Every structure is written in C-alpha cells, then in structure tokens.
Length: 346
Image 1: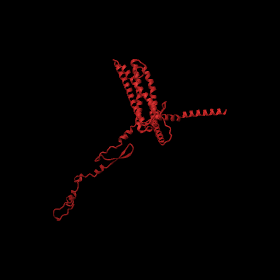
Image 2: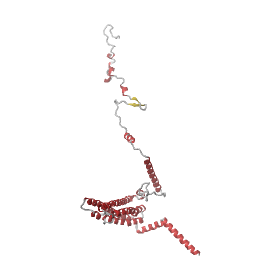
Image 3: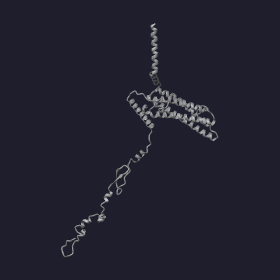
Image 4: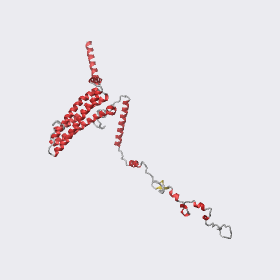
C-alpha cells in the first residue's frame, strides 16, 4: 500500500497500514470504554445472551419464553401461591355434606326473612327453635327463644344469666346421677341412684317451664303476672336447691351430709367422698346463684312500678283473651239464651 509523504524520496510521515496511528483517529479511540479497548474484547453476541430465550415444551407443544438467569434480580413468590397449594389439597365434599349445608342455609334465610317480616309488623308464625334438636329427631322443638330479638337490650344480659343458672342446675342434676351411681358401687345402696334419675328427668324440664319461661315472657312483654309466677316458683326452687345442697341421706341428693358420710379410711372411700363433695359444692353454688338472681330481678320488678293489682288485671285480660275460654264462654251464653227462649216459648 502506498504512503503519502511530503517528500516522495524520503521516509513516509504516516504509515497507512496502521490507521490508529493517525492523529485524527486517536482522540476517538480514547473515548471507547475500557472494556472495548481492543477489537478482540468486543463480543457481538453478548446482548443476545441476555435476551429471553424461546423454548418449546415437548409435553404440550407450547412455546414458553424463559428469561436468562444472568443479570436478572430474583423474582418474588406470588402472594397467592400458598392459597393455590392449599386449594389443590382440599378435601372433597360429599353429597350429604352439601345437602346438609344447603338445608342450613335455607333455614337461616327463612329465619332472617321471618324476622324482617316481624319487624315490619306482619303477623308471621314463629318456628320453635328450643330445645335445639336435629331435624330428623323424633321430638321437635317446643319453644321459640331469641334473646336478641325478643328481650329488650337493657335486660338481655340478666335473662341470659338466668338461663345460665338453669343450665348449671341441669348439669348439677346430671352430676347427681353420677354421684348416686358412685354410692351404689361403694355401698350397694340403690335408693339415691334411682331417685336421682327420677328427679333429673322431672325437675330439669319442669324448672325450665315453670320459672325460666315465665321470667323470659315477663321481660319480653313487661308482664306483672309472669313476674308473679316466676317469683312464686323460683322461691321454692331456691329452697329446694338449698335442701339438695344439704344432702339428707336416702333422699336422692348428693349433698354435704351424704358426701361426709361416705368418707372412710380406705382409698376408695376417700375418692368417693371427694367426688360427692364436689357435687355438693355444685348444689351450693347453684343455690347462691338462685338467691342472687331472685334478689336482682325483684329489685328491677319493684323499680318498674308493678304491683299485685296490675298482675290481677293482666291475668283477667289474658284469661278472657284465651281462645278456649272464649269458646267456652260463648257456648255457655248460647245455652243460657236457648234455655231461656225455650222456657218463654212454652
């Protein structure tokens, strides 16, 4: 290659075989980054390595784009990955379970609709919900009970506490059956065990009907008559609970006297005596709760301005409002009128 010189017969000033020796090119070469100072360091395929690669999945023949793992930050786990994993391992629901859930939802929807109609003032029949028995049970619920709907808000807590007192009494009567069984196994006496079963099946429903339901209806309707019924029955209930806590032998109650009489020097006697003593304390606690409840309810009753005269008026009104009483009264009046008409006729 020829070189251009000022003197054709002298040494060439610039060797054109090395273009980077040219003074006009050297400033440009200094601006090149250090990583690309030479041609050998330049890699034209470096950017292509960082680009996403297209891969073919042989299982479903679908194209999947996978980014290169170089120079990429780690990806965060999706927030719903745990939920999807849990959903994939969910238990399959049987047809009976689905049907049971559907029936429960239907009952709740019907109850909400009935409450809405009742709040609007419509005369909607109430479906009994107590005792809470299964749908396919041979006995159906006998009463309707809803503290939040029927009891005023200022008395809901008190009525619930009275209901808890009834539940405590019921559990104590069940424990009394267990105590009678312990006495039967320890001493061979059958009297306490037999009477405990009889009293449990008699007093448990009777206590609910005779004093809890009157108190419930008294707070629901502000009824003086129901208050009077509650106080009359609940006073004898309290006296009976104190008698049960005392525990006179051969009466069917595992009170303190029966518990102390079953203590002896043997280990079996000590264990039986301690268990009977726990039942006696349950009776005593129930009696104390009854005294507190009757005192508190009586204070509320007296502060409301109720009296015996108001209870008598309510009783007369409710008595005459009874459909059976009205039918009997109408039948008696018709008979009297017919007999009088027939006597005048002849």
